[in-house]
Length: 178
Image (cartoon, rainbow, N blue to C red; front, top):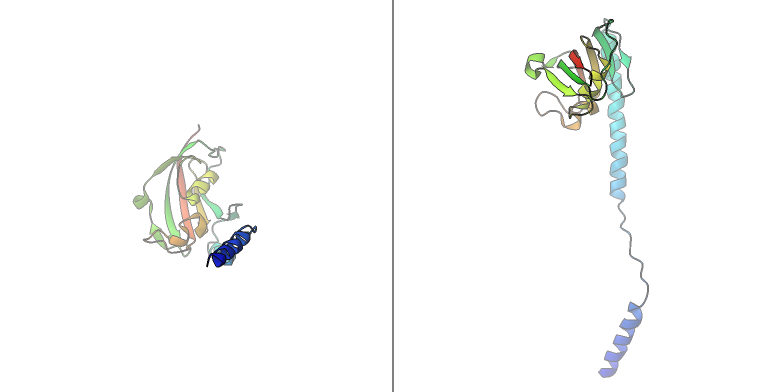
């Protein structure tokens, strides 16, 4: 009995002295999810850009221009006398309305009210933060924003749907330089 106990303790001590490498977890599911998510987002962006092209063709009164951020803009009312654009730290006041790409009104200026904020220093949806930077005081711009700059994959829980690109009409009422 003592002999088997000694023999088993010897084997245990010999086996425990080996250098065992820890196993690395294999998480392929996360990699697959990220690749699928990127693919899905690229498809959504391509669909939205084609919807923008259709909306631009239908609205032949305005001349839309693309931006590096992925949205389109046109001037409904242009201010040729003032050349100053908002920059970081400037205080702007504006009013806006939100429509879907077919021109159906979702929120009007009265519902949303006037908005005052400091450029790039306050939290606001990216569509408004970026769009205001293209307007001078007194100008009215029409913007076609992709869903990722608006309310994204959640919508607003009321009138804006999931992954819905939107048309904003923004009027810059006041610009106070910092």
